[in-house]
Amino acid sequence: MKNTPSTRNVIVGLSGGVDSSVTAHLLKQAGYAVRGMFMQNWEDDDNDEYCSIKQDALDAVAVADVVGIDMDIVNFAAEYKDRVFAYFLQEYRAGRTPNPDVLCNAEIKFKSFLQHALAEGADAIATGHYARKEVRDGVHYLLKGLDHNKDQSYFLYRLVPAQLEKALFPLGDMTKPEVRRLAEALQLPTAAKKDSTGICFIGERPFRRFLQQYLPIEPGEMVTPEGRVVGRHEGLMYYTLGQRKGLGIGGAGEPWFVAGKDLAANRLLVVQGHQHPLLFSSSLIMHDLSFTLPQAPPEGRYGVKNRYRMPDAEADLRYLDDGRAELVFAEPQWAVTPGQSAVLYDGDICLGGGVIVETDNHAIK
Image 1 (cartoon, rainbow, N blue to C red):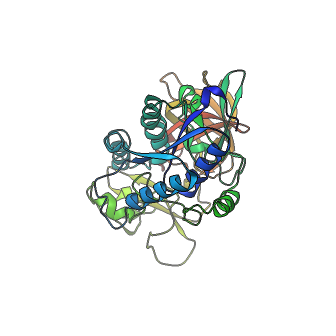
Image 2: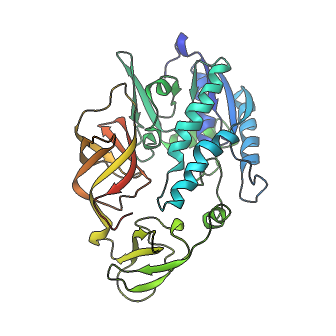
Image 3: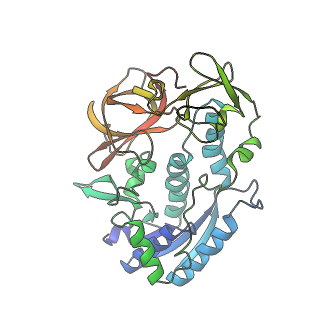
């Protein structure tokens, strides 16, 4: 990480977590003129017992004090509701499983936050993502984090060149244990704070109870591919492909998994056994394509992640006439899920990708 005259003034997104805390320290240590900014993006029930926004804001203020930087609190709740949460509900209503973290990054952190930071005089913004960036011949490349167990480039694939040019990722060369140790050595107040695993900017809370506030409950039957009813579901939106836990199907034999959804009949398709054929897909179609480099990658073979923290799978990319793209896998892939993202890699370079809209496995909807 090198401080250059073109990126001297940096605003770091302080979330109240350990990663952004260490990010702020590293930037200041590297000689940047650093300010912090805490984003409040959820207001509907911020007094709820599960919402940690107020505590996160207090932690961010405490970190800024220890690091020795000024900090502002900004509110993007309207933008979040319009650009992220409305889409989130729309996808669940359609029976798909969206990834709000991907949209949060593209629409809030690297759009609303970036625009606000630039208007405030920043040359760039920084976040605590485990990803790297390299500039080669004036082109900004998004790379996997050095620690592939923590790599978060998957969530950043929708960053376009103009956004990537103004982004810094100081943690890209570090592992999570190294970040924790540095935070402890610096006596940062977030050093031992556990990582958030909740919905982006909304926090951790009982998921079903939360969705019930916005979507109607429509229970229905769980059925096998042969049409045998084996249980009841509490609403198709609460289940995702490949899900094993929480099905409540008794009896002997192998575990049960979700293999598909029949929205018209409000039925959940379930199968027994992790290796059941209906859990695998050989190809997928993705739409809403977005790429990190000035030119879209040419057709050919790439590494692909169709969910976070999976090994890259080899697949051939082909563009369709309707603006979508097809990926054909070298080996069938397990639980390819519409609504999630398929992300392309050339080695460590994250090229972009799109949202999965269908697969060749017609049980998967």
